[in-house]
Image (cartoon, rainbow, N blue to C red; front, side):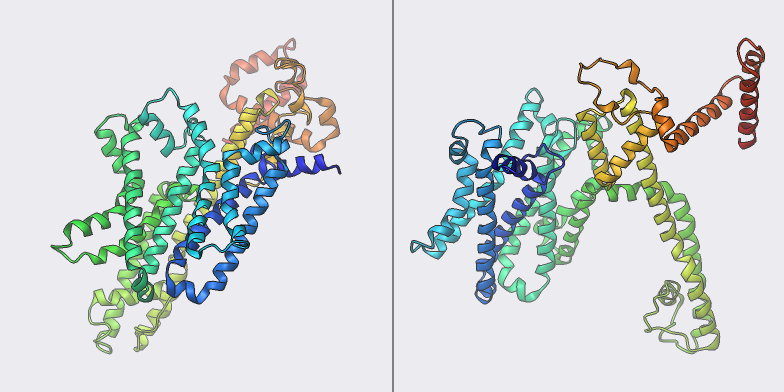
Length: 539
């Protein structure tokens, strides 16, 4: 293997983002993750009680980070001749002089300079902030792409494209989503750590600053979404449309994520609202907007809600019946634990849920007998909603995958998959958590069922219209004769089409037409009569 081959292979695997089979996107995410971890490490280094006792670990992490960034810089320098931006004479020199390469070099240079020169440690830490500028490598090209795509759009249309996934959103929308998700996780982590007194004692001011920044970011996001939502036809009216958007579950969650901060700031002199701080954990629910699995779950709950209501009604009825019986049998024996029916509801719930904490338990024979019955009933009754949800969730995924399969058939109508169609397939596969192998298997199955030869997709070398008509939904008998499984699939498709025809067509008129020997043979007529009888029997 020559040096040029190795260089091209490394470029395609780790640098070329257009190569869907490479690891460029994963490599880019790893770089971003290390940059963010460096920022977190710099923050904790300012806290003496944390840094002084773990100074060695911070130093080792810095060495590992510099090593990773050095390898990244050397890799980009090595493959520069393969990069279209630097291809030609003196490609590596042009790479070294490029703005991103200068930023990459400045991110690691202070560490190496400290080995030869006596640099103040505080200055060295400050210079490490330059690593944040490495994020521009992902942000700046995305910004230029977004501005080019939306150069004729209004400000509101641009904001809508940033906040929502549209054909004009580009990479900038993904960066915006990643930014919001990161701040959600940071905010929730700070709320959790703030509850630890030993940590809050040293970082109380930092937590306040962090919460203020978080609220500012989430408030800006909410304003952007409210301002631009009228670009969606569902919310077109300037006032009622925005009010309708504000009532959506995702918007309510966005409002609840920032409400505790403003309520506590404005009304703290009237009421003690410190308890509202725990509601900042609701910010974790903002992640539901960015999870396709959560969206599918909401669809499932909405679809199965009538059945869920019936199951919940049965559960509540059993809980109330159990509480009444528990009070009836145990009140005299344990008046402190079964004082009244509302207090007995707690015992009924934990018994039916088969949890049984042991803090309340019957002592009378009748009470223990009813507990045994309730525990056995609870195993089945409380499992009903979970079973409904799990079954409906699997069914929803199956429906969505069947829809994707139908879309594959439509895309293969002309016998090939275009690059645009392939990007749509990859996006849908990512949403449905399908691996590349599963997508390829679905594509191959679709080709087989449509009777397309494996090489049909590549028959466009003589122009966009060459042999176009000969490839449209044809049956390649030579191919089917060599592949019995493909012939079987094609046979099932033809039978299904005949069954649909038998249901939808005027059967009497068609029967009269086929009765004429000029139009159909006896075998064709008998076959049609059998299909009609079978279709009537099934319907």
